[in-house]
Length: 437
Image (cartoon, rainbow, N blue to C red; front, side, top):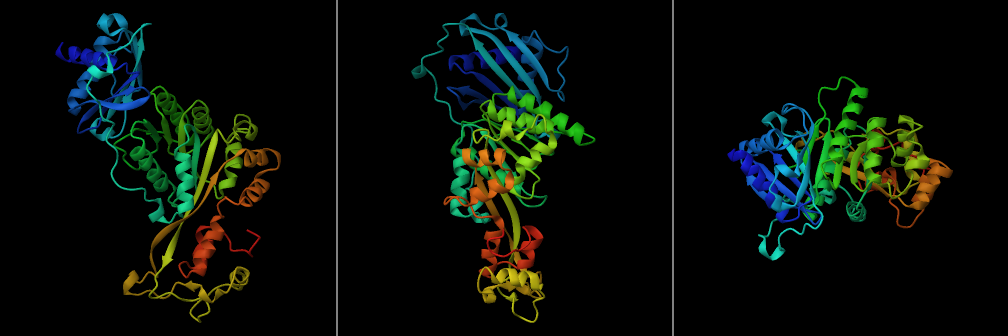
């Protein structure tokens, strides 16, 4: 009875603020109750994990009338609390519930989201009579994309994408290209600058713990079809959790892609990754998943797909043991040398040497990102539909404010003596004559 009363007190407190939603999050070591007030998150209360779990159970088992017969910690469940189970004074007609497991599941992580429906005429308590509530705790640190290798102009483009109220933002590249790390850095910055926005993730598996988000893992899927279906189910759960931002770990199949685009077009900012070699090939990749549901004429809209960020990681040459490309120690194909000559004087280009104590005899001192940030607009999306990716790519890159290709950026690093041209071909693309890329 005490726990039930505590649960009613929490709902009543939220109603005083005229909160639209209550988010109860069990984090393993603690629990936090957040409410959405005037469209933004605020922290109502912080509890022990055990207290939060007991309150969630009491709401589901004692207050909810429309629900499953039992509370199943490992299942996603819906429920509804009728208004007559709550004090009449708070003017709540019903509370819709979605709950389930979330990261860290190994420590019984879980969430419960409650959407409050009010009777007509509800006004809540006067704001001056209420305690001021703080925003959720923002992650520490600074925006690191610049330190990772992104140019200032690219960081500004990504910041503009972060400010968009809705739409899909894709990070593309092969496995090991660092796209998930870059996306995590961007989402951390969103949480730092906009702690009132709610992030819900669906991942396989959870790669970066985010204290400010609710993270749902896809587990137990035996193949891509089952994984896609599980992702689609989790996205449907996520959309019932009143998110502002949704992260999908990867668009790996049609169910996930369709769900991502539906979320983007219904007012959510959606972040995801895609395995594709060129940022302008995301259209072909989506169409290959399902030509009927993912027809480019449907999703090639710059309000639906806001931007595509392509990234690779390049080894940075050790300045102590690298050697000039003209050195006898350099074994570079004639094809590469002839192509590089069209870009400039190759005497400044260096290649990996035999290694030294400074680089652990590896020849490189670390890796950095080379990227291309494509902020979509009506023109490029029209080109995709009318002429295809090749023309869309060419026309977009000719715009004065567009990003250079990853290949062109990487070649400039080579002429700066920072990158071995052979590593460019390993990670980015074949080196071709200037103007042919």
